[in-house]
Amino acid sequence: MENISKNTRRMMAERNLRFNKALGQNFLTDTSVLSRIVAGAALDANTFVLEIGPGIGVLTQELAARAGRVVAVELDGGLIPVLSENLRDWDNVTILNADILKVDLAALFQEYAAGRTIKVVANLPYYITTPILMRLLEEKHPISDIVVMVQREVADRLCAKAGTKAYGAISVAVQYYCQADVICAVPPHAFVPPPKVWSSVVRLHRYAVPPVTLSNESHFFKLVKAAFGQRRKTLVNAVANFDGLCTCKEDIKKVLNKMDIPENVRGERLDLIQFAQISNELYCQIYAN
Ligand code: SAM
Image 1 (spheres, protein in one colour):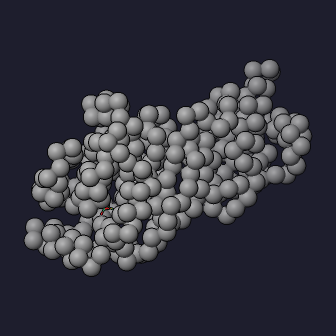
Image 2 (cartoon, rainbow, N blue to C red):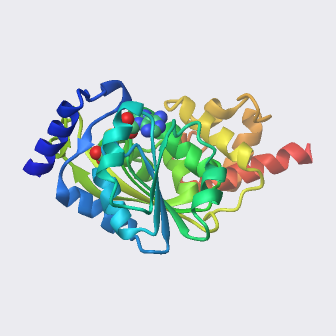
């Protein structure tokens, strides 16, 4: 670890490069954490890996050694020469200098994945964790697993169960698409420079079919957004008259009574299955009226 840290600092210094805080540049230098990430991703020759933010390529080398093909998308053009140099021995890696939020992922997978199982593996830039994850999930690409380093509090939110403090709209959304698990917690000193926060590696294993059936996905996500938008309010007060839900207090109370849920329940107490059932019932009522 000492060596990777020193090498990382040396490679940056030799090229007059600075760690760009605004781009979330905290480079991983702990070999045991690198091993946990690649083991968690379970790679083989039939795997295609999209790596987001390869930095100078320490994780990329590990991915290239195990996966059939790797595409690494790095926004910082200043890192591309050192990244290319560090990956020169790998002919199965393509480096793209681009913003991951703007890349056409469908085209990328079509061009590079060629029938392989698609996985996303990354030490994510923390300032855009949520937009990246929501993009990967909502666009419904054929991604089987996402194994990523995120801020520890974010990992807790992704995996949180109903009724806990960390539980929120993103927990419900992620658990609709995936089985979410924390692989390990990672201290600040595993990176150069060390971030101010602890991190965690999480694995999101995408369900082939979501665990609940929805009458209307967009209605479900609006309901969840409304329920957590005003966390301290009861579900009835938070959701009634919410833009786009076409529902009133009486309608929601009727549904809660039918499901044997107290009328004063807050959204944070409801699990994925209950949210799905409430959404389906309310959606049905819209068409019954
Ligand atoms: N993978 C390297 C590692 O583990 O040491 C670097 C990880 S560092 C936390 C995040 C990386 O994401 C940086 O290299 C940063 O330049 C890059 N990055 C930041 N924003 C990005 C974006 N919008 N698209 C692609 N890469 C981005």
